[in-house]
Length: 243
Image (cartoon, rainbow, N blue to C red; front, side, top):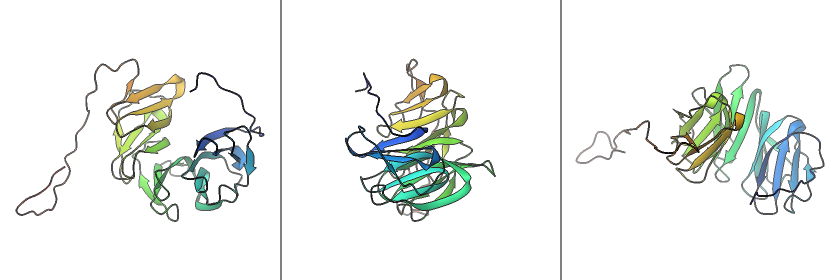
């Protein structure tokens, strides 16, 4: 459970940025120079795969042993045969795609930074990557993105930025992190409990879906905002619903 760690041989001498396991034996890792490696024995041995690119890959994600995606400098790539072959799904040389995440085989997100417009955004697919739509993230400078279901998600990024979406990534609301350090990874175990880690050893935790505090300061958790949704149907007669 992490009390001790064994050093494994990857067979390569480049930086590896991301790792994902779909079960206790089958896993993938990706990194510089388009490197993607696969293991089928829990990491004891790793086999290089033909990624179809030589770009820096920052993130890899699989929803099954066969179906997966990789993202990096300028593109998103997809495999449907366990990594034996990869095809480009979304290509834009000006984008730095930092993170990719799927909740199922159809719904996925990738956070990126635009080197030309300097506008951080995200792209979403509801078709397994056959089409991708751009959405604004309100200058979130995102590095990591995580969704607990198809509508509720968070992103973390540079300068302590954390953003939250409740509509599948179409719109994002900034949350207060209490730090200006770069936040490199975010993870939620349910709709309320999550952790975020970053530079200078920063570890943040929330138990209220985004009111973040350090582990050492959890005496009070108070919501910092509220939302009153539009009533429906509108106009209404004789009744209406308001969230």
